[in-house]
Length: 347
Image (cartoon, rainbow, N blue to C red):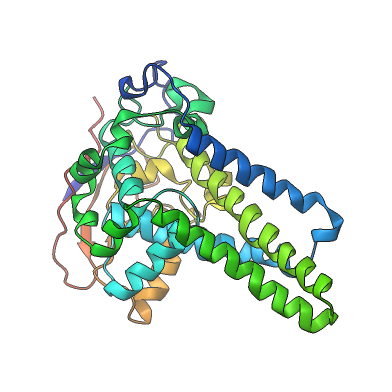
């Protein structure tokens, strides 16, 4: 059993964490030119969507479909709740499919994403937190990605925090060279080629095919990638600065309804920090967590099992509330991972 304590007024958050310096492993600040080039290039390519020549309703629809498929399934379901927190299990073939969708969101390899997020939980809103906005909003949002961090460069550090992930040969293969970039490039080329083939058949001309192919590439890949990026980054930045708190946790995490809407439930961040192992981030009836509902659907069709959930919701009144974690398949208690911390009691 894990004892949590709700705040007396869930709409009133405590003071923001004291201002921090950037992590010591990132000092002195040195630009990571490879990442800077990728991030700037994808943003610039996404701006091509402003061209009327590249607009198509199919391309626009692919932004929203891709946001769910690559963002929610790849990042939220797989990278975050499956690989990082082990909130459920699924067949290995399906796990690798989901992980590949995450790679196609261009948010680093599964092992490095997991390692950095586990570091965040271990050092949340302290100097060693990789992306605390207490070191500056822009740092917490995306600046941390654009500067060298010695903790992120070594495979040894990745192995320390994500050894369970690196044991899988596919995830280890993604660490070799630029294999991750090849996967992202292959999926981008597939969007273009599929669009060109469809456009050529419909328009009857090569130019029509190229136009439609570029439309799907720009909207379905670049615009979608940017939107998924900023949704994930907003969880790191906004939800440690603005919003309300259901729980008295050791850091400044908050719940933010708009971020939760844009990130399919990841914005209920204070709930997540209170119980990081739970597959469900929405702890009140109105805190919709579409990612968790997707995991429930996967469980219903046999693609997910041993889903870790809260057995009861936090009480509306003030005072301590006891929550237990259960495995919905085996009914056995699931231990916390080493990087996870239980919520401290109020003084």
